[in-house]
Amino acid sequence: MRLTTATAAGALLVAAGLAAAPASAGETFDAVKAKGFVQCGVNNSGLPGFAQVDDAGKWSGLDIDVCRAVAAAVFGDTEKVRYTPLSAAERFTALQSKEVDVLSRNSTWTAARDTALGLDFVAVNYYDGQGFMVPKGLGVGSATELDGASVCVQSGTTTELNLADYFRANNMTYEPVVFGNNDEVIAAFQAGRCDVFTTDQSGLYSSRTKFENPDDWVVLPEVISKEPLGPAVRHGDNEWADVVRWAFYAMLEAEELGVTSANVDEMKDSTNPSIRRLLGTEGELGQGLGLPNDFAYQVIKQVGNYGESFERNVGMATPLQIARGLNAQWSDGGLMYAPPFR
Image (cartoon, rainbow, N blue to C red; front, side, top):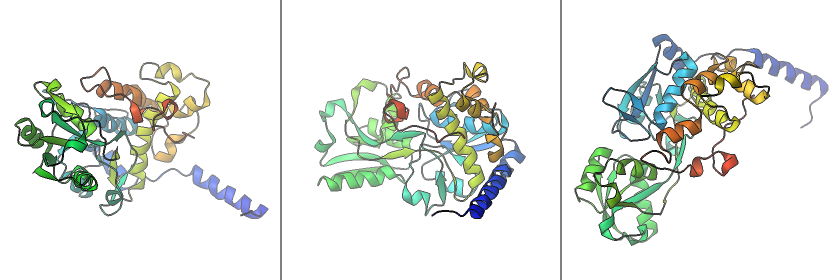
C-alpha cells in the first residue's frame, strides 16, 4: 500500500510520539520494584548445570543466570533475587497464582502452555531434546531396541507425552514407571526398578553427574523431540515480559559482539555503534523498557555474556561436558541470536 504524503507524515508523527513515550511499568514490574527483589521459580530437585544450591544456600546454573540477569537489569544487583524451588507439577500454577514473578525452570515452550495455560515464554535460553539413558550392562545401543522395556519418567511433563508418542510411532510397547519428581525417578532407575530413564538430554547428562559411577550409564544417541527451554511470565504481562526478554538477549548480543564481563568497562569507549547502543553509551533503549540505559552493561558486568554462562555452567570444562551444538551463536552454526538492539 502506498501512503499519501499527508498520511505518511502523520504516521511519522505518531511513530515519533510513541518512541518518545516512556514505557508503563505494568502490574508485575511495579510490584517487583516495590518489594525490591525478583521472585524466581526454579527447579526444586537440584539439576546440576541448570539450577542447584550449595551448602551455603548459593544458587547457580544456566537457568539461575537468567534470574540474576533480570535482577541486574532492574536493580543493578544480581543478589536481589529470591528463589522458589518448584516441582514440575507446581511450576505453572506458581506462576499463574503470582507466587513467582518469572519461571526459569528448564520448561519447554509448547503451544498449549503458551495459550491455554496463560503463560508467555519470552525467549529460549537452551535448545534441548528428549533422550534415553540405560545401564551399560543392558547392552542396548539404540532406542529402537527398547521394545518391552520399563521406563522411569516424571509425571506432569512433556517428557511423559513424548515417550508415549515415540513408542506408538515405532510400534513398540513399554511399561511406564511414573514418579512425581526427578529425584524419585533417578533413585528408582539406579535401584533397577526400570530399564530406562527418559528426560531431556541435558537432564540426563546433569543427573548422571550425581551417579556413583557415571561411566556405568549410557545416553542413547536418539533425540526424540524438540525441547526449546526458556523463561516464562504470565500471559499479557507485556511490560514485564519485555524486561525479562531483553535482559536475556543482552547476554546473547554481548557474546556476538565480543563483549565480556572482563572487557565490558573498556568496551564502553568503543566506537562501534552496536556496542555503544547495547551498553547504553548511545541512545535510550532502556527508557522504552522502564530501565536505566545501562541495564545491559549491568547484566554483562555481573553475569557475563551467554557464552560465559554456558561454559561456566554446562560447557566442556564442567562435569556435564555439553558442546554448544544448537546453542551456539547463529554465526557458528547454532540457533542463538538476539534481535537487534536499536
